[in-house]
Length: 82
Image (cartoon, rainbow, N blue to C red; front, side):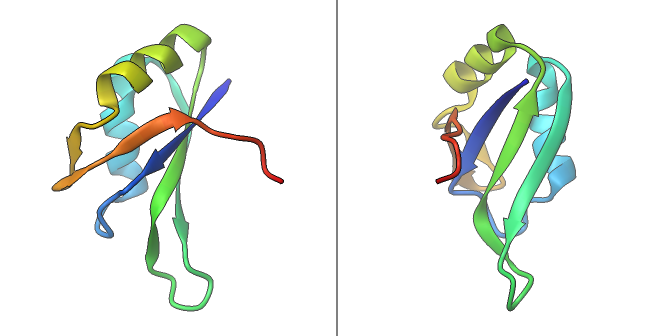
């Protein structure tokens, strides 16, 4: 599994939207939108886990800079939590 960071998401983007957008590259094992603890509103970023390195590389090269929900998203490999 390769975890990808998806940034600059529209606040209206759902987990289903992420899954649908990245399913073309392979099996999406998890799609998560990070929400603010206090308000419950999206923080504008999330993560997608894809099965396989090739699928992840394809997703990064094809999706980085594309429009999703009216915003130009940023896609790269997620860094480990500090």
